[in-house]
Image: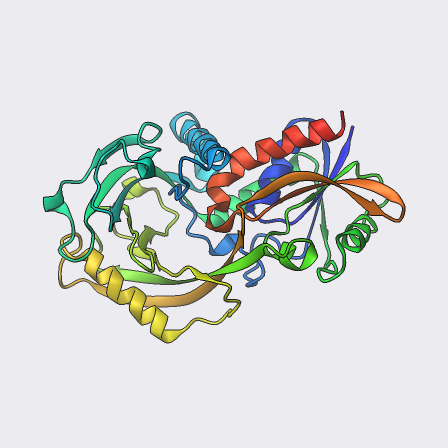
Amino acid sequence: MAHVLVIGAGVIGLQTANDLLDNGYKVTVLARHWPGNESIEYTSPWAGAIWHTQALPDQIEVCDWQRQSYKYWMDILENEAEESEKMGIQRVPIVKYSVDERNDPASPRLWFCDLVQDFALIPTSDLPPEGPKSGNSFTTVLINPTRYLTYLLTRAKSLGAEMITATLPESASISNTISAALSHLDRKNAEVVINCTGLGASKLCDEAVFPIRGQTLLVRITPPPPTSRITIWDSDPVTYILPRRITPFSAGPSDATYFIGGTNDTGNWDPEPTPVISQGILERVKKVMVGWTGEDAQIEVLREQVGLRPGRKGGPRVELEDVDVGGKKVKVLHQYGHAGAGYQNSIGSARKALRLVEQALG
């Protein structure tokens, strides 16, 4: 049984570990942060975590990963209700507004319209009074990050994965870091090491990796919106309103807790919320809410929060490299740089990682 060491316990690392375990590999996951940890260094818990593609048709591989993720989750939602509840995934209507006046399914930006369920264009008369020029709607997948990460971790443990908590020397060479990781194993017998360090890869091995700072708010809306849906407007910066709750949406709108945002601040490492940014988010969200919740809806801020997405010039890196570790070649599979699409890339990206592991081991 081949042994694979996965470094990193974000959504990419844990999904990859599960796929490897399902295919008969022995897996060890080594990480500094785990589900339940709220460190700014741990990106996955801070995500909006919805299927909302921003990929363009010429990003062929990324589009394919996102197709796979959408189909995988929808299949579970439609056929495995108990499993979907454990995972914290839900079918949710989404409304997407755009500053682009084109409203044609043939437009490249709408490459996904034949993939998603219930796709429809929004008539101009139904758009909010300020800002958006076009819009569309469809049925998407909303993920509760805490539940989903915990599910992946629990499932990996149940399949026999070993978990090791350790801090690795990120500022050292990739060779020294891999050596340090292997030293935590009882025997240095991992045939493949998978680097799922996310933003940490910027210090470890790749200057093309950079932070994309996202500031968001957890809020309560009163009176609650009449329907539970996701609303996104591709304004600059982006504006979104996501239901953030555990109870099924069929239970009604009584739980009016929402995750709103946001920002895409490239190269900014600041972990602290900025009050003026929070105020701007609230003002933009109120504009989008007009005609949906009513003019008198009140937004109570429960929490301000910041996450740092792992961006990368050139897009995600999922590829093999032979790394010299103490005179021995170690097969390292890099898998990072998914920016704000970690969840929706995770299924397809993990499947590619599995194929590359199989290739590496011949």
